[in-house]
Image (cartoon, rainbow, N blue to C red; front, side):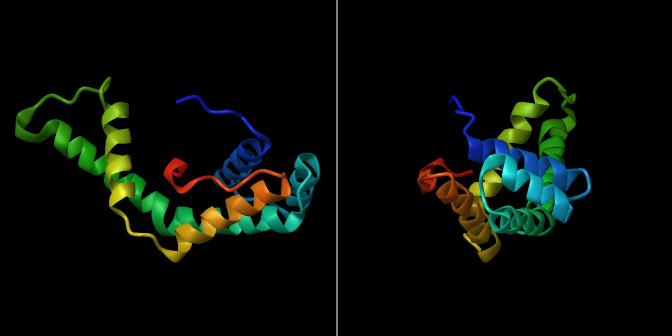
Length: 131
């Protein structure tokens, strides 16, 4: 699958990167909004939604997926194969994500993403393309 690096993806990537490195200040949010041509409100909304999602869902899912993958890869005395680990981990993450019921936190993250897209003149991401 090929990804087109549209402005919304670049902005979201920038927000996520800054969240992971300590968060966004009001000044940084303002600068990102100006750089990408969106309102500060949608940057703040996505920042809050992503932070909540990371704390409540993503970080826990990541830890669970790593543990499950390691256990599965070493069950029955098998030798751990670190070359297969990334693919196995991705499969576990996908399985956990697909098994998770829709919830308010995930909906708000999706809606915050779509608000960014709307301000950039882009349509919402179809549900089948979401992950």
